[in-house]
Length: 313
Image (tube, rainbow, N blue to C red):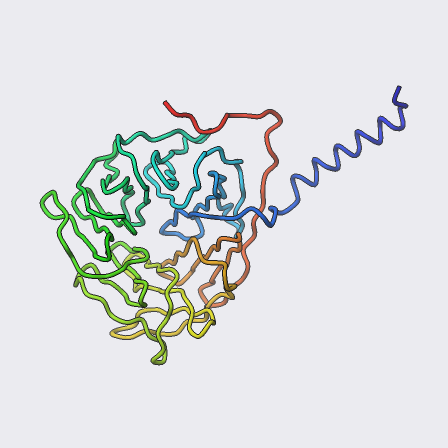
């Protein structure tokens, strides 16, 4: 039999382990693969590969409060009243505040989450836009979708097959030749693989240059009513550029690490910015232009297993 002193020691050890679980930071291998960026970048949500969620606590930290449960390699997220994430193929999943549930849209194929003001999802070549309380199929494009932007069910831009397409009278028509990496903004702006800025209003591209040197773009962010910001590298060094008139203004960049790409980049009208990378690093930019490291914390798992993995109706 276990003596009373040994039993007391075991109880104390269990209590210590529980305390450490509450106060310990997130494990280094908790990678991030997607983000749902908000107009207030400090309120953005970050997502792990199996649907782990990191919510902002309002104090410069992001807290993991769910263990995941999506049987997909999550690579995109968008907000459609509730959070929706996409993996490599259909179905997308929505978060109902307790568990993930499959979102059936009647299509199969590679999935992409939109990054515009209105939630949108591409499944194969079919484009769906959130028109509360349901998803509306707005049209179809040919070729793999690389990026998607929507402001409504009639104002939609899609990058596919090395071209940009816009929705017009119920069908997609060509709106420029550009190999787009990603869209952002309340009006459609995008970065291209060859270091150009695509402007959906003019449907033209212009080079992204700092001191005459091209930026290798990694991410784009646009505050509502503000200019585009482009995060990337120049000569193997991190670089951040802000559109100013017909040119670009150099802005101090966070210390990104080679091989650790950004999965989320957001900025507000005051210049407050957030950058999150795949390794889980979070960088915060204050209004004075200085960068600091954000924090990641996690809450302990519930005492019982809780909800099961994602449910498929």
